[in-house]
Image (cartoon, rainbow, N blue to C red; front, side, top):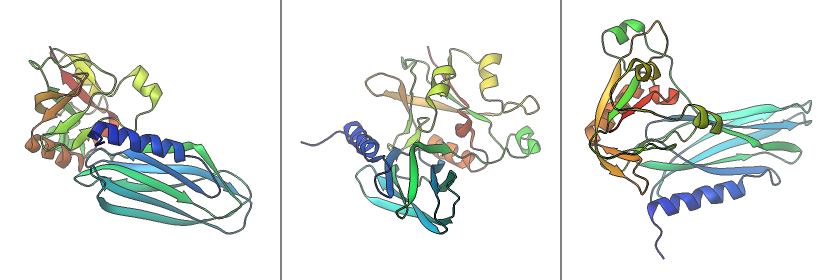
Length: 252
C-alpha cells in the first residue's frame, strides 16, 4: 500500500518518537523541516567519566527519502556528573522535508531524552537603518482573503512546488496555546501589526504575499507562488522573522 505524503511523514515522526529514548548510548529522533530554516537540536548529557567522546549527527532527507546532506558535531565531555548540553545547528536546504538527529556516547554517559529540544535559530535583527529603507522585512503578511481559509492552531505555508515554507515546527506547546504561530484578521489593524514589530523602536516593515489556494483537509494551509516563496527565503537570510512567528493571515 502506498502511503500519502502526510501519512508517510506522520509515520516517520512516530518512528522517531518511539526511538527517542536513552537506550544504551544512543538517542534518535526524526522531525520536520521548514525550507531555509536553521535549527539548533540539543540534548542534555551527564557523566562522571574524565573523557567521554560524544557525537551529534543530523541526516537530512527529501519527501521521497532521498539523502540530501548531513552535519556532525564531536565533543569530549568530562565529569563531575553534572548535566551538560550538546547541540548542533542544521539548515534545511531546498527540497528537504525531514531530518533525523542521532546523539551517541560511550557507556557511562546518561542522556536525558525528555530534554531533547529543537529550536529555530534566528539571525540578529538587521540594522534599523536598513529597516527604515525597506530593505529588511520584520514579518510576513499572507493575504488569503477570498479563499475561505479557516483559522487553525497549526496552519502551514507551502510553495507551488510543494516546499514547506512555514509550519512553526519548533514551537513549544505553551506558546502554541497562548499566542499561536500566526495571527488572523480581515484587515490590518494596529494589534495585528504589533505581531510583526520586533520592538517599539523599530518600524513595521512587512513582506506581503498573496495566497493562491487552500491545501489540506482542514482548510488551514495555504499555497503561495514559487516567486513569493523565494522572496521569503531571501528575506530570512537577513532577518529570520519566522523564528519569531511574526506572521499574519488575512482571511474573510
